[in-house]
Image 1 (tube, rainbow, N blue to C red):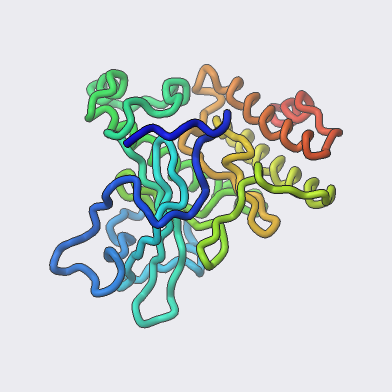
Image 2 (tube, rainbow, N blue to C red):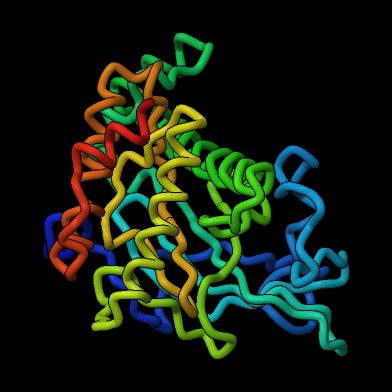
Length: 296
């Protein structure tokens, strides 16, 4: 597949909704396949530790009779594709929209800037570590699985921390993980229109902009208090849905202590978001003061 032309310095993903696929999806073609939809719900295939934090949201469909229907690609990225999925119980009004993020291995010779992010994130088996370093087929599969596990774990951790701190969660709810597929809350409208990125939000309302910054500061504070930096935070992986700020794309989450470059990743995260808000009118923001407040 030809490499996509780079669109900007942060990200080359597209948030357009396309009825197309970047690769063939191996749907269930056994005689027991559902009469409607593309596959049976995979909810029962994930173990308890591979499912999102409890209590599960009311909107989440967990019935075993549910089926998954794919509607197309929401976002094509360097390491994964995000597809829009409906999970519904046929003949009832029980249904929910989700994002299925599928990490690839063989299609990519190297994951995007992964060497820095993977520092301090090793597995126990030396054979696996060698394979990951050599980028063998097995090693790339292991890296893909590690990215998926890292993102699901980060989503669960951030969701639980927000709840503990009694603040509104600033990440999508993690539904489940199965292999290299992470299912999570869909951020957008019921008709399938995805929430816009912060980068595309245009507002002359200073109060609204200030509210978004306050939410951004809450997200940064929760992450750093837990000892993490997003690692690739920018206006291109932050969504805004009906006034709610939502941080996405967390597979590269960095342990600020364990990773030798942790502080540098945090500084870059802060610089990216502060610069955007300053350019939109919040001139009183001071990058050094924000960083100092986060690392106290």
